[in-house]
Length: 323
Image (cartoon, rainbow, N blue to C red; front, side, top):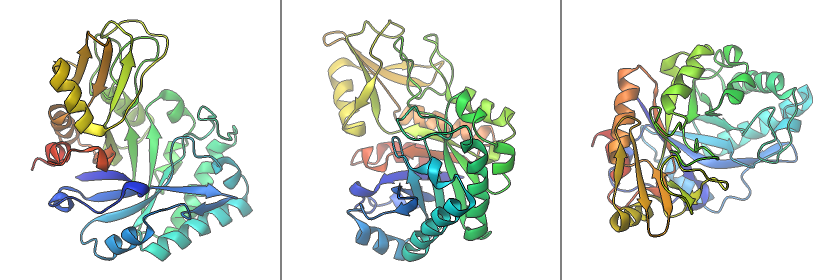
């Protein structure tokens, strides 16, 4: 099964001891679109990445393109000429560094929610671009995409055509928090609070025609925090914010206010009544449940954002890998 880590380029320093044997894929995040071309000129750790790829062993090293708020995609795929320029520029990076493939992280075709360019034509143009990308990559390299965990993301993709040229889809089954009431950001199953669930997202893509064994379940190695709230299900007008510091910071919150676990949703959380903060996250128990779910339901595997958010003991990755 796939166990794939997204790693921020700026934080990449290699892997902790033993982690190479726990992973199958690494997505280096992110290349961006500049003037219609893929670019990694902003990378700070280019040499570390080159050296790692040179001695990567069994690992599949993937170039991830985009990320939240990264624009330029819509015009870059708008015409046959622009698609050719964009696709070839990505191939130049793949060949230069020795990547094993490309992961497209356009958030999202036909949707300007992140403040980027969007067009109704993105749906068809994205398919045409991915078909061209497969042609250039050839049959042996990986072509994947990160896909949103909402119905609009499904509706804005020609999934039946995309799956003819793509290896698998990385489902971003995190950041699914409700914005009007307190809930979980990466619950596996539905909760009494009404939070979206990973299980529902998987079903959504499967109903749209994506084979389950080509869906990769997303996990979060970080937390989201609701402030000035009265606990799970309470109303809120601000929504959650990103909790920096990864799992080590989450453990600090647990030590202060105590861990609670929603067994039905497979979702851990902390509620600090003193500060009125509600923190939602994954932990080793919920990650083990997600891996078990992926195996038992025939999924392609699991992935997570982000590698450097784990603790020094690799507690989160060990829970996913079972070792």
